Amino acid sequence: MSPSSPVAADLHIHSYFSDGTFSPRQVVAQAAACHLNPIALTDHDTVAGIPDALQASAEFQVEVIPGVELSVHEFDQDTHILGYFIHWEDPAFQKVLLPLQTQRTERLEEMLRRLHHLGITVTVPEVLRIAGKGTVGRLHVARALLAQRVVNRLQEAFDRFLAWGRPAYVERGVFTARQAIAAIRNAQGIAVLAHPGQNGLAHLPELIQVGLQGIEVFHPSHTVEDVFILTRLATERNLLITGGSDCHGLAKGEVRLGQARLPLQFVERLRQAVPGPGSPGT
Ligand SMILES: [Zn+2]
Ligand SMILES: [Zn+2]
Image (cartoon, rainbow, N blue to C red; front, top):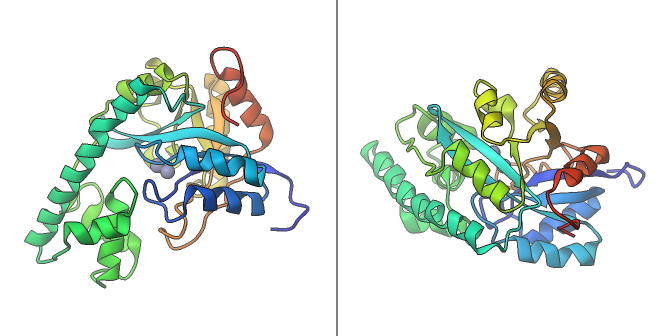
């Protein structure tokens, strides 16, 4: 990254409080080095990393927008909804996240049971050791399979065992799209559909109807054509545009910070859409 690179935003980053490998402080430090400001910490189903990220924000002079990425299972598919500028300390919001944590543990046990039936033994402590402080998920199981050399690449773990329709896939998501979007909006946040290039747009009208306000246009999995189509769609539907690297530290084999750079004008539009007085989240 050259020192003259223009500053841009990255509104989609995971820490080790979900399935990334960096601490929130490392995330902020690396963002500063990549000329990313502001950033959003968007851990899966948890806001536990936000205090540390906010603390590092002052030290590294990088604004941290409190965020979250909620998993939804509806319409026979997994969908991710990002929440921005959420009032993360709101007890009602934290309470909403609790069942998701419990369910993740039950789901882990079921995934491991199914792998066992296939002759592959991965233990709960093994996966929890990899997950560390994180909310445990499929990526941690994939990393355990990689560590055991059952697979040669992380993606292979998903393709053979963990993806939808594969033998160790276990459905999850106590949330419907309506519930996830309501949880975010009740916490004064903005609800955005994550990486639609990956998960599809078939149900966008229903999501908008239940309060979706934006779509993630810039994401490393999106092609130039995706970005073009999604930008046009956002304009037609009057949706906010966001973007981010979806960086998981080293958990996906490479550090993605800097791979999606959101122009700052889109952050300003997002900020303007935040309900109520003041500008939260520095
Ligand atoms: Zn996602
Ligand atoms: Zn993500």
